[in-house]
Length: 158
View 1 (cartoon, rainbow, N blue to C red):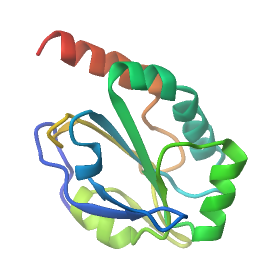
View 2 (view 1 turned 90 degrees about the horizontal axis):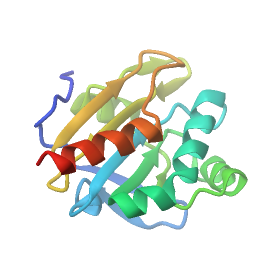
View 3 (view 1 turned 60 degrees about the vertical axis):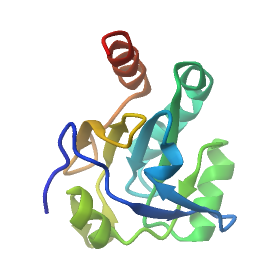
């Protein structure tokens, strides 16, 4: 399991939304800065707070050229409930293969119950990692204000 470092090309990860849309990461984010969020599950209050925060930032993210996708091991029904409950408008994938994703991204895996620990990536418009944030437990994750500030800085200094 190798961690993704700045400059690394983000690996291809398929994401299936609750309405059976297939989203290919990082291709779906090409042309904009992308945020990829792995969240532990609907049961995690920290994860739900993070998803709500990124939803609140969607308008300012659109102005800055930032697109968000998220995924977890939750099943379709649970993910649909999460999307509805929190009014999420960005693509949220379900049924992630925790071990396979960990194998290509370096994300930490919790074995029992099986889930990905919170992990976040900011990608440039070419699908390269700008920053990666790995958590080995409940806390430690990307926040929208930091992402917006980082992308603004990178664009100004390109």
